[in-house]
Image: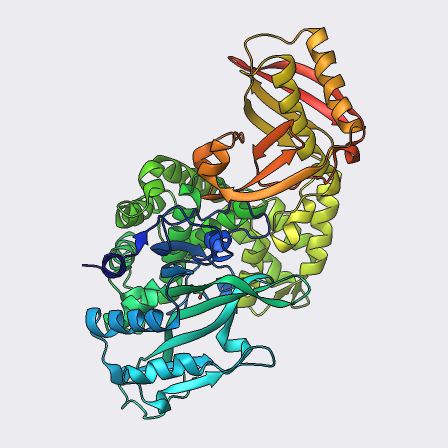
Length: 583
Ligand code: SER
């Protein structure tokens, strides 16, 4: 049996209910591009909301973390990884949590006690030292010398800046053939962390104040790739059973052995796996130059560059053959991988066709460039040319430059990028920098205007009107909706007047977070309900509109100015399109 199944089976035997992994793309949290921890979708329940599945939950969770992007190619890092987790939502606390972890590690995985050590929270001015956890560990047979007390930086866990948080106890495994030292030194890197049990009993607000949550929770996370490597006795995560078929496939298509080509093979393996998961997500992400789409593009293009290094024939279907191996590995665990295989293959195929068209020329251009430069810096114009003409993501140029001992004028590039965006009058320039979803003030207004238009159409044309699509730029909004006729002038006028009346009424816009089923039950509208995470944000405008939506929105409709329909036309069969502006 594999580790995922063993973990779930164990926690089910301890009365936990298995919940599905949340989507990789958080639908309602524009502050993060990807889900980075299993607890993220559970925040409202950690804060006290009853969870429909009860107080004991477990899952395996898809995560993408981009902080390690530059480390990919070594033995232990991944952009996509799976995390095993169990939760107590105001049910058991430290004692059972530690006992369950200990039992699973020693009884199910048969890890000997001698190879284990833990850290516990040393406390600070506000929170006492965690002697409770330490004594539980001792009662299980762990020597006090194997328990280290660490401070806030190491043993206090919070996702980001605010929200549920608490001290944690981290479990370490001695990953070496050396004799195990009697005393645990957390700085000795032969000890690797395998499991983090967070005791979430506090909430941190935006002023930095810590208050007690209404309930004491447990949130644990165990990195699957690392633990599998330990259990299989290898120090290279890519040498485990998880990657065996993938690496073997790369060896076949490149006709080269893993040994001696590890870095490129790991990058290809990691990046294509992540690309498969991002493009399979129900959010429908496609390669682009902003947000998640840009990350997807970067990953695919970087993988292609390394495939070229390995002399994999670019005109072959290597990328699809590899993706199929990955799909097979995961389709029984994740429904979207099963449902969206065709989409994934299409994305990979199109993106590689696109990049391959310019890759060869771009590489030549790059070589010419570094051979002719008098300095060791690739200037902004050349970096931008590589991006704009040859499709090299900035980070790819930087990586190639670095390999040759060059750097890139990144600030200059970004300036140039912005100028270019301003010239082409698109609204996405701001998104490039941090890679975060961002919406300007005007786009935010259009978001809210979209909800008002949707509501007005239902009043004027009829309740059968449903949103079919929407697109917002800083200049206008576009709204597609189901409707069997061309709107009459009177209908258009009435819709416009109604929206403007609601704007003048200055109605407050409010947001509540709730489980998806509850939102639907309460009558909130959504375009593609299956696309949303289990926990959704519902935006209400007084009692005239209620929609599941990622936002952002204005606080009062009065902020919108004047709404004007500039065009009404057919979009497709049974679907009309309105273009409108705010003045
Ligand atoms: N939230 C904690 C982590 O991500 C435990 O799940 O490490």
